[in-house]
Image (cartoon, rainbow, N blue to C red; front, top):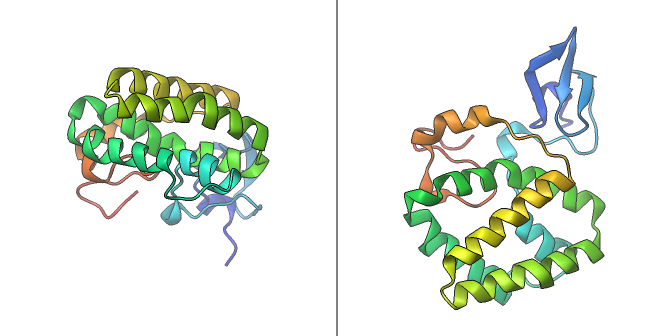
Length: 182
């Protein structure tokens, strides 16, 4: 089944130009019946950009030390502390878009730099219990990638912050307490 622009995750049906719908991916307008290779079903959105860097582009095992450390940090500290809610929400909102960009350009040189200069040091900081430094460097990484790929964040989703499911947070997909998922 082919996904058309009107059904795609990247389309914004509220932002139109005549009979065209705005595509956040290409940052231009398309007819709602058009389709392209990046189209993502709104019900099947998800994407952890860190896993994309480490596992999909660099071909490291999905259970490598860095990914295990980051996942344990997410599950055992970040998800259990309300002060990290916006950080996790941002990851779940922009993470899939960053993952798609990284997956499309598959720039091994960039991913190697991100892995060795950012992700490995963050992992080491977590192991040393330097959590504030790890969070600060993770935030910088996310913001740098948002800028690098010129990703537009939709702040409207933060209005649902009270319904955000922290226990499922940080996986590259937004989950709500009152719904199965977004």
